[in-house]
Length: 125
Image 1: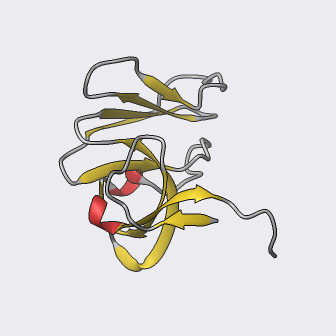
Image 2 (image 1 turned 45 degrees about the horizontal axis):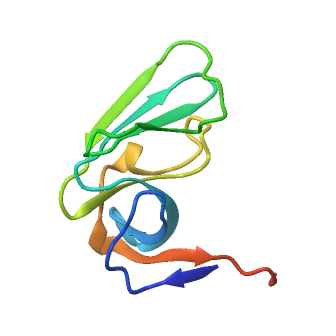
């Protein structure tokens, strides 16, 4: 994995490496789902967790994952508006409970970001 550590601007869609707010000794990697002013809504269904991001400029909402049909009724819903100096991060595992992220522990202070993933290595063990 290649990581850019000169983090000046974090963008929606970036994959970031960061220190967990509740335990700075733990380092995680997640996708940025929301930036300042964005509204993010996570809905839990029996088979999938969908995350809808409504950008601050009210342009087209982004729903992830985009290729899964939610089954059943919503049994839990969480909403956040991203504040200055923070980002909303989510894992790519859309199975309910499959990823420990902003849905569970809240907005990530941008100062906890160690770097932005820029690529992955093709070799290694």
